[in-house]
Length: 143
Ligand SMILES: [Zn+2]
Ligand SMILES: [Zn+2]
Image 1: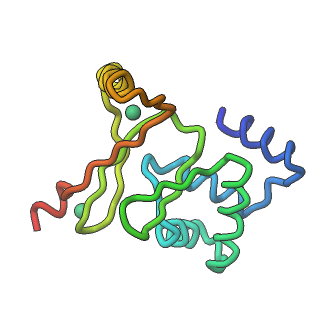
Image 2 (image 1 turned 180 degrees about the horizontal axis):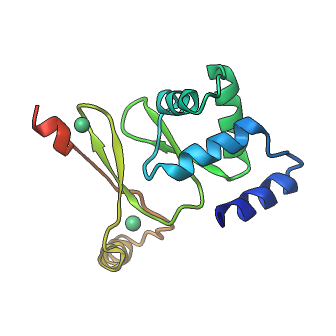
């Protein structure tokens, strides 16, 4: 898989080895097209027979976060989600009922036009944006 190269380079640059836990975290996040909570991650690790405690997972996540492999997504309240940091720019749909998060691509040309307008009108230099949609997912609507 082509994502490996980038990760190995980053790890090497920080004198870190690709340990089993680090590799598994990257794999789990790579296989899921949506940000995951620590709870989700623990659950997925258990499914692949990797029993680790929460502290170990938190520590590994933090390390990978510090060197730019994993990014944290903070959505509204206290809940934190993790995703691979070098994913292409995208947005999120957050279900308020089950707290599941999905990735969504937007028309960035139109967003950029809006951004430019705001920037011109307010004299504010915009470096990046994040855009999240809160609501009910398909599954929760049918309950
Ligand atoms: Zn839901
Ligand atoms: Zn965007």
